[in-house]
Length: 112
Image 1 (cartoon, helix red, strand yellow):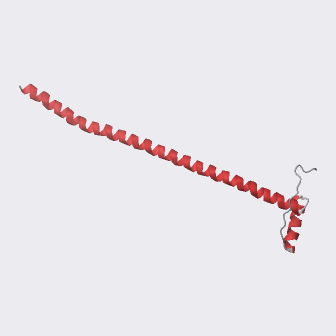
Image 2: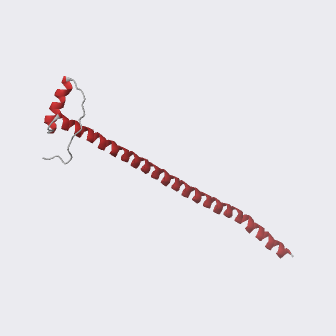
Image 3: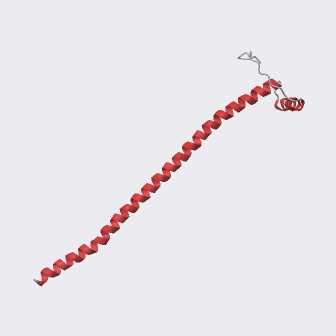
């Protein structure tokens, strides 16, 4: 298998004997060619997870914001319905007074 991008940079880090043995066991279990390949894959995976995590957080925030806007829209709609009913109810309440007033007018005219 050829390497598409030559690897010409070197990164060193020290590990204990126990860590080295665990890394070797992980290499065997994961099928990595070397501890270097294992470390490179692990760092690349962390970078990928970090990028996906940011996108996930943005998506979560947008979803929460959308839910809040929908909730606010529902509340405004309910309020407008309540106000419409209140206006309608107020009109109904004033209607009998107008009817009674008209009845009085008719009765007064009949007395003449």
